[in-house]
Length: 432
Image (cartoon, rainbow, N blue to C red; front, top):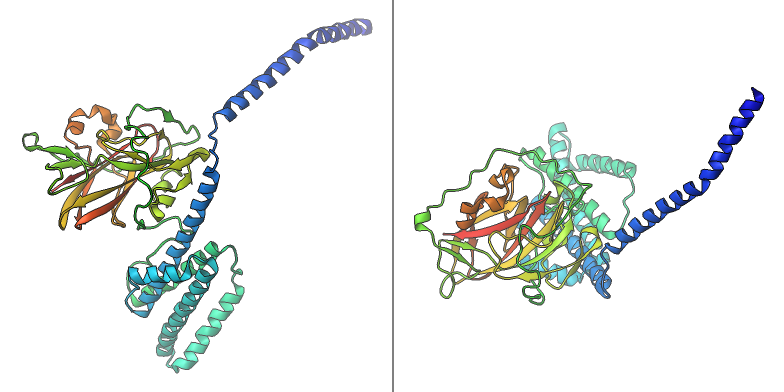
């Protein structure tokens, strides 16, 4: 038995020795395939052109300044509300921004001074309330309030971080102070202004600026353009009630496309805004993308270069005379796009803005948020929008509308589109 086992072991070792070269070649082949796959993946990654890195960094720096200015302005407005005074006008805020000249140190010093004034005003109000409840002098009540605040401040984590973070903390503290005052006075709602982390806002600020872009460089958007998949993304969407498409009388239908109304402009009862500056895709964050603030919302700068999805460099491109509905190129999943245009009218005008989007959208007119999608179900969620031929022919891929006032001259329009998966589009149609 011992000899037989030895013979079997010897045969097994001989077989393994014979197979060794084959296993070696198989291992080498696997490693070569892995390296080849990595090389293919690496070669397909976007590369930045010379100068784009510097332009992206310059844009980031400018974006950071705008975010700090927003937080400082929010503090100014909250201070005015606490004091019961008129909030600073846009001219006063602009003059203040010019005086601070974008210097982070000066902005932080100003923010700390405003925050101190807010705290003093809040302490006075709380002291008056405490004096009334305990029937003690206001001065004594104020001492108690100040001691309590000092003890709370001593036990709180020490504030730190960069200037932007410190400004955000001051704004957050002011919001809590204002919300507490409202609660004491029985008023509903919390404080207004941007969020503490600077990621949400209700107003897109700044005029369109810069060169006119490269006309037609983006090419007309089409639903069947190549799509960049996001295989790691799972679109979890809770649909609300179905939003019916509004009725359009085909017997009284005059369609037009353009951006100018009145003398020398288009004559129609349904006017499609067909010419836009487009930029995207920015990397999405699922449903949170709708309320997350991306750089174009801080101010439209048509010369800016941003870092987009997967590290690509993004610039604005002009797309004139787009087909209805408009599909911003290049299509990507879990991605955010922006579009900017101007509408010209010769007199004060009120118009309906009929909006359709796949998936979610926001729209600002002259820096005021006038439209935001809800989570309702849409006809083009049940079937591809390009099959809704009647609605397309009538410029009627509409999920909702809003009445907007336009002033004489140019009126700025900024549109935000979030795409979850697969097909995407947006369209804005003006009606009387």
